[in-house]
Structures are given as structure tokens and as C-alpha cells.
Length: 471
Image (cartoon, rainbow, N blue to C red; front, side, top):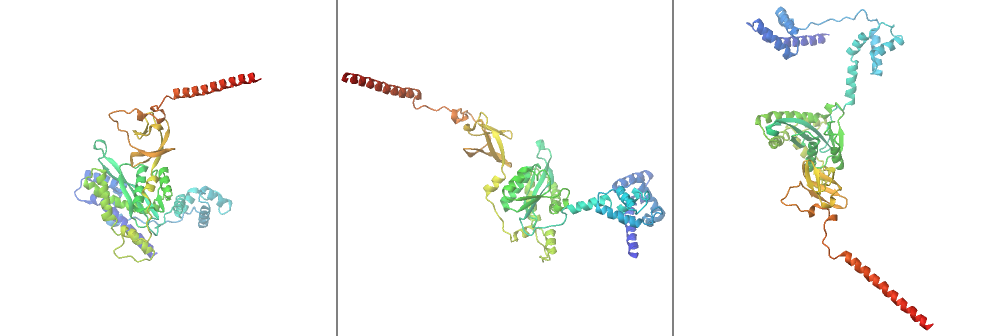
């Protein structure tokens, strides 16, 4: 009981101190009524309290000084209207709520009445609901418990590098890179190693389309090699079909955090606090271009974040009862000292995995339209539908494929000084210089055949004449 009284007194003194600090400006001598009225409104807005509360605290201090600001404790007594066995009824109600959390208070009371625990009409729904809530078994409590149970909120850390990579997007500073110098919002896309907290790839972009995530992981794989799996939230950039297809082609698994389970991505969220610190510093540099912003960001990562001892790494090893140096371990040190080897992939294989594929029909000029520009193909493909493959980060060059034709690259058409008609026609209908007259040759052949038949006929007639003379 003494311990409870001590806790109550400490709470009262803390509340009195907060209230005194709130009304302190009103206690300055020489303030007129108008000034006090203005101060009261300002204090009420800043501390999110009613104007009436400010008046009440001010009056309490005038009457009782600091002690007058202490909240009063109330001695609660059980209402005489509650039945004698209410504790037993509340225990049964809690049991019923635990059995089926979706049961309403009205249903619980009905069950208690049907089972003979209480006479009909004795328990009020509001009374039972209030006591269930105080006992921690209100509907809101149970919903919170279920969400906590279903969410992956427990802390985790993979034992080696490149086992799990987490990705996320963070708002960056606005830069004057729009039309006529308009401010454009930038976005930071990052891929962070779950074990070492090293940034495999992290860059600012001028959009938050799904292609920036593809570019982030493309760069990460090219620099550090293949990883086992990646972990994303359910943002549209991370559930896009192309990203899943690209990573699946490389044998990389994709996992998504459950909806509304932000705690499961704590490493990235903690890293974003570091990004906030950089954003504050970047605003002081008056950065004008995206390239300049990324240059400073890479310097910040290499010279500060990657080489600074990380508290999360220390906590991980301490939880495993593994001693670490007193100076701590930085993300770069942890990544480089890991015993797991890196698995590098062929650059062409990685590039092919991240290519986008689309269908286009070749027009009469042997060209295709792509992103508002025309690309020249082969004349023999006029009228056919071809497949184009391209890197979304560099769409200047596309690869065109068609069955029976060797894949070739195409670039946007540039209008020349002259037009070559031959090159704009399919090979099948281009003019072909004749070697001879096939018509006359065919007639000559037929003539030779006719002469041979005539010769055979004459020979047979003379043979008949000779036979007749002999007879």
C-alpha cells in the first residue's frame, strides 16, 4: 500500500509541475487583461487543452499555490446497484469473451441469464461493458491482441550477409529540377542488408515509379552479387509484376510484410532516421541538381553511415552472448568480415533479367513507335509484330526480336538529308535486276519441246509407209 501511495504522489507532483509550467507565463506581474486573454488562448492551443482548463489551473494555483495544481485522488466504491455476486459474474463474462472474442456484451449477459448466474434484467449492458473494458477485455483490447499475435513484430536478424535484403522508399528534399525551375519532390530508394545494415544500393530519384526499385536492385546485384531473398512492404512499387519477374529469373525469393505491421521492417525505419539527418543537412547546401544530391548522399554513406559503429549490430551479438570490441562494429566492418562468400552473376544474365519486354507492330516505314519516338527496324519486318526488349533506365537503345531473324538493336530514328526508297521496302517486294528474260526463256524451252514432238511424228509416218510397201 505504501508503494502505491508513493507512486500516486509522484504522479500528482508530475501533473502539478506540468500544469505550473503551462500557466507560468500568466503569473508574470503587470499583465493586463487583454494580454492575459491572448496568452490563455495561445497556451490552450499549444498544449491542446480547453480554455476552461487553463482558467481552472490558474485559479487552483492562486488558491493553493503549487499544491493546488495536484490532481485529486478519488476513492471509488462499488455501486450498491451491482449484485452481490458481481465479481463471479464478471469472471464468467471474461471467460465467455475469451472463448469467442466476437461475442457482444448483450450476448454475454443473455448467456449468464440463461445459465442461471443472474436474474433477467439485473445486469445493464453499459455496466458490464465498462467493467470488461477496465479488466482489459473490451473489443478494442482483443482486436489489438489479435493484431499483435498475427503481426511479425518480434525482432529478427539473419546470421549472415546476403541472406535477406530489405527495400523501401523514403521522401527526399525538393529540388528545382522541374520546368522553369519548379520544385520537384525526390525519393530515396534503398536496398539494405538485413545482417550487416550495409546499403547495397541507395539513390535519389525524381519519381517513385516501380522502375526506381528495379534500378536499385539491379545496381545492388551487379555490385554485390546474388542474395537469397528480399523483404518488402505492400507498396505498389514492390508488388509490381516486372520486379517479381526480374528477381524470380535470378532465383531470388520475394517476401512481403503483413499489412499494417510496420514493426517488422524496423531496420529500414531506423535507417530512415539517418536519412532524415542527411535531408536536414542537404537543405543547408542549396543543392540544385539530382546528380549533386546523389554525390553528397554517397559521401554521407561512405564517410559516416557505413563507418560508424551500429547499435543494432551490438545488440545482436550481445543477445547471442558473443563479445564484440568496445568501439563497436560498423556496417562496413560487419559486411566485410562475414564468412559467407558472395555469389556474383554474369552481367549479361543480370541485364537480361531486368529487361522489359513489349510487343510492337512495324509500320509501312519499317519503324516502330515506343515512348513517343520512332525506332527503325528491318524492311523485311513491315507489317509484322515484333518483340522489343529494353532497359527502363536507358530506353535509348532497344533490342528487337522476331522468329527467324537475328535479334538486333535499334535506336531512335534521326531524319537524314536524303530518303533511300530501297531501304524502306521489304526485301520481298524490292526491285531485283534481271539476269535474263524468264518469259522468252520459257517460250524457247517450250519451242524446243514442240520441235521434238514434230520430229517424232514425222519419223513415225515414214515408218508406216515402209511397212506398207513390204506387205
